[in-house]
Image (cartoon, rainbow, N blue to C red; front, side, top):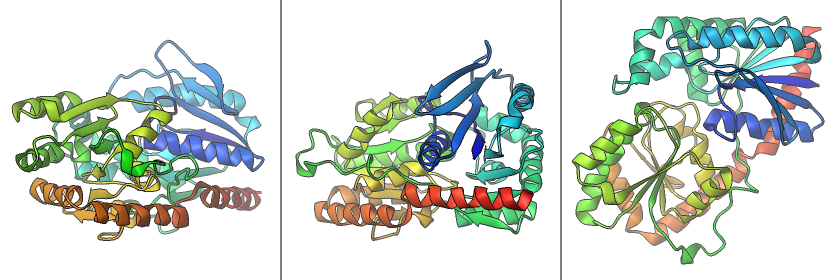
Length: 377
């Protein structure tokens, strides 16, 4: 079967959804399927490449906000029309996917809803301001995508609940994000780490609660001035975040790694003491799964999706969102208790191996594709 995946970004520069598509595609190819990915490229034009056996079209993308989705959709539709007859199924990975026209059966995996994300945002950066100003338009696009799809998948039960609440979608199947447990492994010499720090990995977005992490760092550094924080990723909130760090005299405590490849990201996880994820709204954060797979305990907020991964008191600690003081207390609890970190890290690894391994998840998708193709005929 030939599957056409459509997503916002794709490695080597990608966020959680992009790596989800990458890993799912690799597993599907091993199962005998063929995969082509359509994703954002550059303003100069479309180019095609092959990555690990995946045909990738990086389609012309013009960042002309707020109409960037519609413009990108025009270029995708133009290409898709010329190659559509080579595919069996089109699989969208939403949110922020443009409206696409196709005569093929359509699967959509919802990695979080635009409407839910907007509801939890504050207008702290340009991206958030644009989303809020043009929220009706983006929500309308999302509604059309999910209500016209032949099969709707949600990555978490909370995301499925949002689809039902916002768009009346009752028949939603939950298939979680996965993690490559053979790649994301604990460090071999766990007691001989050369560095020790609190790690965040993901988009530098105001929705991720990173301002709260900086405020929590202020409390933490009052107790331990030498604590280090490493932030991996890029995003529209980076400039404002650095300004806040500077205003609190915490420049020596924070480092920004930007986008890194998977091998470097693995080292960041393995060397970290604690992983932190203070988000306000989530689908099912892949970076938490990766940290857990590396045997690292997590401090996270009780945001939609997150509490379906982190078991409070067993694999990490959960705190209320928008509460820097409680976030700081939870981080300090783990920093000051080596045995608790060890126990939670081991439990985290076991939980990922049991529930979030890619082989089982790709098998679910393979069966779903086959059933949909039969139903479509």
